[in-house]
Amino acid sequence: MAQLYFNRILGTPKCLLLTAVCSLIIVTVLFLHRDRLSTKDQAGTRNSTSNNQQGNSVLNMMKQKQDEQIETSWVDQQERDLAELLALAKCNNTLPNVESDESGGDKSLGLKLLPLNDWSVMCRGISIERDFDSLMRPHCRDRYLLLDYTYCSGLGNQMYRLASMYGIGRAACRRPIFVKGVQECVHGERKKEMWRHHDRETPDEIERIFPLYSTQLKYVDLSAIKPSDIRYIEGFAKHCCKYDDPGRLKLHQIKEKYVQLKKVDYLQNYKFFDGRRKDMRKIFQFSPNVCKNVLSAKCKLFEFDRSSHKLCVHNRLSDFIQSGWASDFIFTLRSIEYIINELKPKYGGISVLLLGAEKDFLHKIQQNLNKTLYTKMYIPESSSRGEDLAFATIACNSMLITAPASTFSWWMAYLMPDNSPIYYSARLEKTYRSKDNFLKEWIPLRLIDGKTIIRDG
Image (cartoon, rainbow, N blue to C red; front, side, top):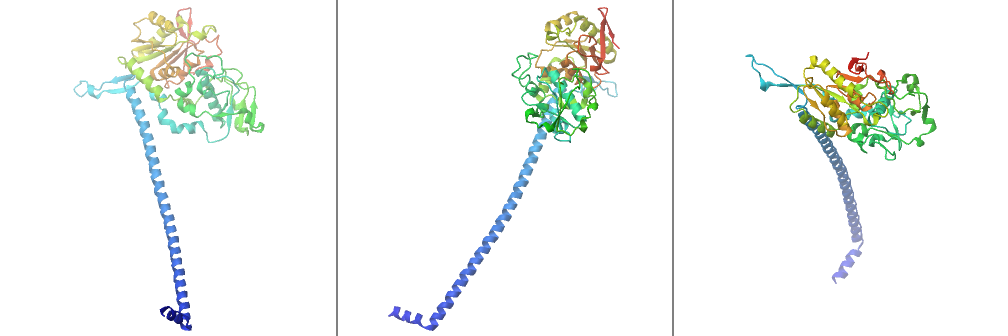
């Protein structure tokens, strides 16, 4: 009965109209509700996007802050390393300057240490690292200078080559670049070469000694260069050690990307990079490890001899004997005596350091030198070539080059502080060099009558 009654009611026209109206209301409500939900979703999406943007902004700020912290920690690390080197330097080659109080007594607690040698010039790699890239990369990009050599040679020769390429290229807005697979000398003598010039060379020699310099070396595959991108120049610097004015090449007017100087390998004349000595000291910055090792060794060696002037005498025999370029015993002995007598009035006590691999020769000098002339005599133990080079530039106040054909001893002297007294043997007749290869302020000495040393010009 109830079901029948319900059906009858729904079947009336009024109920049918009411049902239709109710259905329309329900559909409308549902539609509006859906739009509301959609609006909420869009708002939520906008809020989510906004939140994501805010989150990204926060992340960027955090990253920036983290980068700043890393930057700060990097600087702090450099300062700590530099402080460590400074601490080592305090025991190195310093002259006590004792102040007196008003009563005339010594103020020993107020002792000042005056450095005799600006050791830090060659150990500042950690503080100039950021400037190094701009030093090796001038503003003009994609312009390069190549040489035409196929072997590396020893450390001194490699340093000459890079320095001269830098000097020539810098003036013409071209960066040194090397041939891939042929001129990769950063790791010492190439493996495919059958012999090495020096027994103490190691596969990563330059990389260990000059890490900043080694990271900036750039190589190119010569076969991959388009003919239209390279200019070949012949007839420049034919002699290994004579200066040839690069200005005559007008490199700055050449439009090609690469310029290769044909049949040029050594460029061993400082005039190619004259006027850029400060740049050379930056390029050839010693590694922190080399500096620490050398300064530590210097501390121990001069523990009881801080105040004397250190005259270093570099000798070379072995591979120079056959060519007649080797250090001469009488010249070395008499030159040391001459230099001590010349320097003593200005610097006071003079200590002598005999450097070189041939210890028998050095001990012979030690045994025959007048002991009343000098304060102390040292024959340091030979170390790696890099540390030997660093030791000379850091520990020596003056230098005598007894084998003037040695590029290694030349670089020892050149990297020493400015105004350091430098002497060299003027016996150049059998070598490829002349006085033009030595700085004008360096002093040439010559042995005459087998016993007397004179200034040669």
